[in-house]
Image (tube, rainbow, N blue to C red; front, side, top):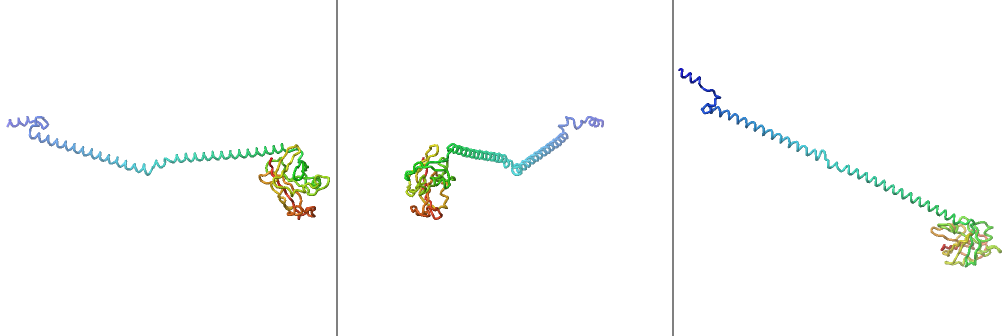
Length: 282
């Protein structure tokens, strides 16, 4: 009995390393190893599930961001707006530059026109003699250096040819119709005596010369011969693009240029006005 008690008192504890070789110690070791393996397995499962969750969250975030970048906030669609605005500003500036050029060109044209008008006025003023009297030569009529007065009175016409004051002078620039009238019969002892009697004999190409009081000559050639009524005053108006001298005398009627009758002497509405028009050649 004492031996048995001695064995119990000397029995080692379960944690003693010498018990690993005993059957009981082996069972305890195996149970602990199983528990440790199960714990490791659970830990691995937890880690795997955590990794899958993180991947799922990352994929969900990526899939959510894509529609926002391409649909909700389309940066490429809004990017051209600054370019379009810059182009619009450039086009507006170009239009302003073109408008400024047009205004400048218009101002230059206006200034050039004003200069031209001033120069013409200056030339006309410089060319105009103080005495407006001119002197007429028509070889076919036998008229040489006859005085032409700038006077439409009957007294002036009785002494010789006159220039209608409302018409132009040969020294003027532009469209000019120097309109000269003379009697067909006239008064003896004056230049008006039969001065324009042979005016119906004038032909195209005949020479007509005028000379001003300063001795400058103006040469013309006949281009038109026709008759009108006394009321046809348009014949004394300027002709666009032409510089002419017109010679006028009375006739019996617009169609009868030779009869010397009462209508010619009276100069009434039934009479005619024979007009010979010559264009300036030099």
